[in-house]
Image (cartoon, rainbow, N blue to C red; front, side):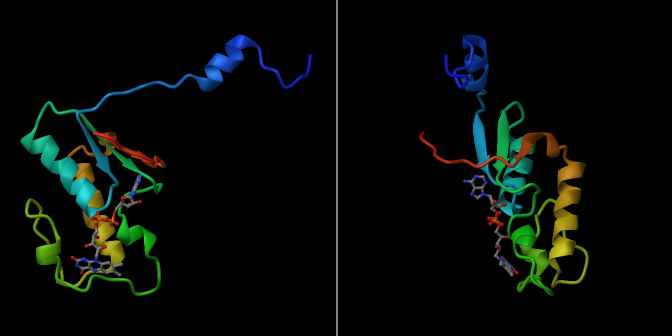
Length: 125
Ligand SMILES: Cc1cc2nc3c(=O)[nH]c(=O)nc-3n(C[C@H](O)[C@H](O)[C@H](O)COP(=O)(O)OP(=O)(O)OC[C@H]3O[C@@H](n4cnc5c(N)ncnc54)[C@H](O)[C@@H]3O)c2cc1C
């Protein structure tokens, strides 16, 4: 018998996947995904949801663009969330935007809804 053949139980464990069901699937944890998570929490309590994020942290644009001096080009008073008014200088660095998003996640218990290093490869609904 070739040694590459796995015993039945090992083969089953390697191929079985757990299926989870959610009412809503959010693509990504950028400013949009985190905002969607916030609004689902506040406006649709009881709705189950998960945000799948391909990167290993939240931020989207503000984590994937890393060149020196990266900052917003419009004001954060309009870019920021209505539910958490921006109170610093109008033009913000990526680091400041990430800090702001981190506060939104922490203050609203959103972290438990985000799964990092998860890429959505297809969707049908
Ligand atoms: C340098 C720079 C400055 C900018 N300045 C401004 C500004 O001042 N004002 C303004 O309004 N806009 C600005 N933008 C545009 C900015 O990108 C958007 O406004 C905003 O950040 C986009 O947020 P988002 O959450 O929609 O998308 P993104 O930030 O792109 O986030 C999407 C997230 O989804 C994840 N994702 C995507 N596909 C999948 C998948 N299949 N599976 C799992 N995860 C996935 C990505 O990894 C990412 O984290 C700027 C952009 C850049 C690059």
